[in-house]
Structure formats: C-alpha cells, structure tokens
Length: 90
Image (cartoon, rainbow, N blue to C red):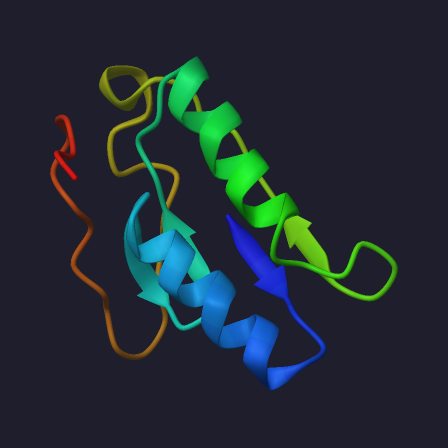
C-alpha cells in the first residue's frame, strides 16, 4: 500500500492508521499481510481519514505470502528488511 496525502494532518493520521495494519517499508509505503476482513477494515479506517477529492491511496495485491516470497521486491541503495510472514496481533 502506498499513499499520497496532500495535507500534513491527514498524512500523519494515515501513517498512524497504517502502523496498525502493516510494516512501514518507506514513509508512505507499507507491506500488509491482511485477510479479506482486515483489508475491509483498513479501507474503512482510511476512508474516514482521507480527503477523497485530493488524496490518493494505492493498494496492490501481491498474492499470498507463501506464493510470492521475496521475489516481488528488489532494492537499490539501502535495503529494507522485509517482514516475515505470519499474523499480526494488534
């Protein structure tokens, strides 16, 4: 998930919301391992924060963790450690 939020207050709220759903890969990019219900909850929570006419959120489904492995990611420069698979307990 990646986002472009046009106002600082909403940007901070989106970042805080996303910390409850995944791992920060970069400031506005998160890796999330969510089931269908968790994805719906995340979309609902974010929908209440963003300005739908100005802000943008991209949600990219990379498939099931056991199917994709680390092949979906490559880095240049500083390499971020990818999270291990498994449930996130909040």
